[in-house]
Image 1 (cartoon, rainbow over the protein chains, first blue to last red):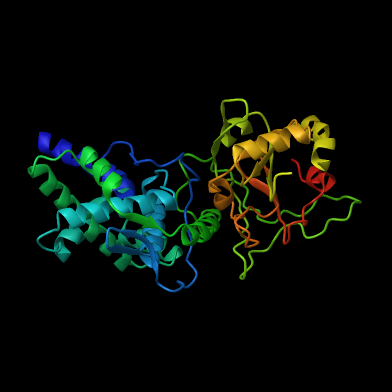
Image 2 (tube, rainbow over the protein chains, first blue to last red):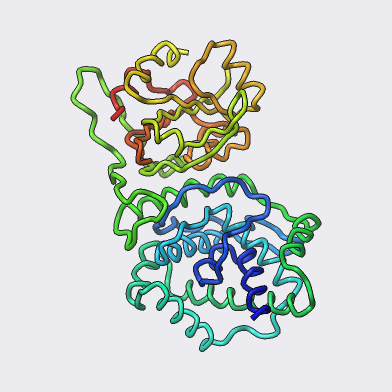
Length: 289
Length: 100
């Protein structure tokens, strides 16, 4: 029982999104990550660009496609389980943590198909969803059942690694903190920054479409109107909104991602707090002054 | 800033104006003072917010593209305008039309 608890705790730290979904419980603890962000679900990714590393952990590469797939899966599974999905950034941090764990405690064998199928069946039961529902949710974001099987296979490997870590007497949180402070982790910020908005936008399109379950943390009454028609007016209205352009990464948001930033003169500005007092006009200045 | 001149109109409509720039806090604060801006102005130095809204580096300058999002109290984006060049920004009147 104690061992089980410890494993749960460790897994929750590392297997950020999946852990919560799988019912390993506890809040997600991320090492050094910022405030939470939008709750979203997702839609198919555009064709992957060159499959380049988005992060390198010591000498292990985490590929762009791996990250995008993991992000989409996190979104789907969170939606199915009615939980707030992790942000793409958080998913990347989870992959980095998992990579450290798996490198230090490599699994002796890959989980077999039966174990994977059994875990998926248990997940589906906890979601109250059948194969067809899950399949449809996956396809909605351009994933296949195979993506889920791979992810669950990896989850089982990470769990096995955590058990091994436990049996050697390590505390996972302390272990990870130390690893993160000493490991050579390089993140391709440009690639991440260029991709996060796309994942978010695709997520919102799916959420505005046929989302199977409402978001727990967002009002389910979002208006699915990316391009509201302008109000009758005499003033000329030019280009009410920017179409999702193929060349640039400009996207049409339907739900505003929440954020918190320190305010001049102290305190913190949080969008959701401000919205309690009325609508907000968010203005991005290209330059100061 | 033209926005400042019409700020009262936004307040009359019950809306708050929140400006962000991918710039250090010091420059945001000095801009705020020198231009007499009374609405909220935030430093998004690490462009987390600009990235989340999909406006970071759209113009290839490692800054936020000029952009406006009108957000309703339930978090829905009612209207958005993303500039295609540094001077492409909607006027306050145009923004006011899109307030709920």
